[in-house]
Structure formats: structure tokens, C-alpha cells
Length: 138
Image 1 (spheres, rainbow, N blue to C red):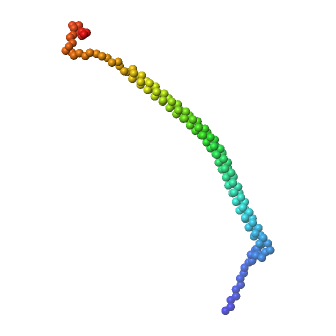
Image 2: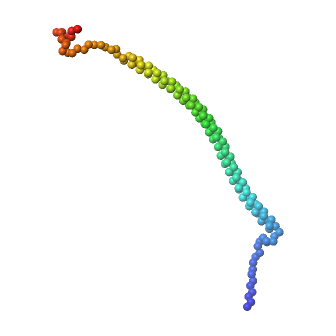
Image 3: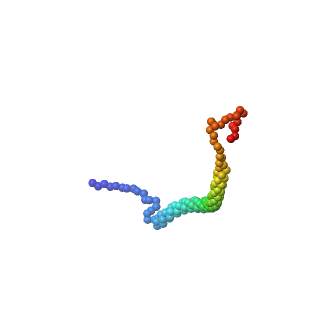
């Protein structure tokens, strides 16, 4: 048994053995790579601009923070000197108040001392009352 078969096929429009086929494929590949690189370069530029803007913002904030720190340091030194002088003034005032209080206490104690009074006590049985209700002097 013999069978015979006829096959019809069309050749590709661009022959594989074309003289410029390889160069065309390389050129297409280079163009595709160039487009991808342009997109990548654009995204890198955008990212770079964002980074530069962020760095500038950080520099501005750094300047502001340094200014605030200087103000805080000045206020801290002022507060330290003021509190030290206040502490010494309060200490002196308390010592002065304590000395005055001691002097006043001593003066008050001296003033409160009553002189000794001597008297002669009599019992009620020994006393006679006059008609005008006075006690006679003896």
C-alpha cells in the first residue's frame, strides 16, 4: 500500500535567510531597550527630584531645630542662674527671718516675765469686814 500525500504550505513573509534579518532583529531589540531605559531614566529623575526636595526640607528643619535648641539653651542658662540666685536670696531671707524670730522670741520671753509679787495671805476667819464692806489694813 502506497499512499501519496501532497502538502501545501506558504513560506514566511520574511525569509529566515534574509540578508538583513539579523540586523533588523537586533535593531528592534535595541529600540525596545532604549524605550525601557528612557522610562527607567525618567523614573530615576523623578525619584532624584523627590529625594532632593526631601533633603532640602530636612536641611530647613535642621536649621529650625538648631535655632530652637539655641533658644532653649539660653533659657536654660537663664533659669539656672535665676534659680541659683533665687535660692541664695531665699536662704538669706530665711536666715534673717529666723534671726528676727529668735530675737522676737527672746524679747517676748523677757517681756512676759512678770515681776515677783510678795503678799501676805490671810485666812478668812482672821478678817473682819467694816460696815462699809471694806477690809481693814493691818
